[in-house]
Length: 287
Image (cartoon, rainbow, N blue to C red; front, top):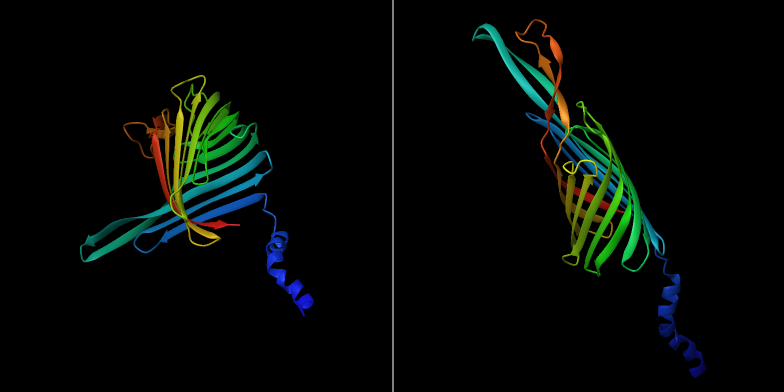
């Protein structure tokens, strides 16, 4: 009997090694998709759609990332007018006007290659569209260096600097506007795990033209994420964009005295605000 029991007594000792062999290898890629949607109807009507996707593929000494997203808000306003011979005989007319009040989209590609445990070089390219801010499209390309100042399990802090080129397509281009120029960019990103299932991320990027130092742009993105399950998480974000020389829109100039129909002399440039903010709440799905 002792010779029969001996193999069974060894099973508990062999289980850890068997589990290690059966464990699936870690995937080299990850993907996170976020979606938010808000709709209101009745006396007020609006639709808000926000989405983003973060894809990353890693090798032993390199990483590739693709990020894309956008926010679109359509609002319907109602204008009412009344007419009639008397108050008792009045007809009320309603006119609905739907317009897009917010429309921003972006897409970025980035490749990082490790030189030392803390130092790396990178190359990136990006596209952005922000119609309310007067930007039909912006194309950027950068190469530079990045450095990990803190790289712990609960806290990371990373900065980078790069040189590149920017080309812009404004909605309205006033005479003398420089829409393509060489740029440099400084960036910083901190990630902090606050609780067992929650974390905070803050990223600041500042870029400037090498031809006009006053044409600088700062983008500050913040996000708080809490995990709901192994696949789902809730994300709250707040982004601030500041451009020292904002884009302009064209405003029709009506000849005075006003004729019927009005005579449009042309368009005059009107400079938009320097600061834009976006607040989002979304559901994140991890694949």
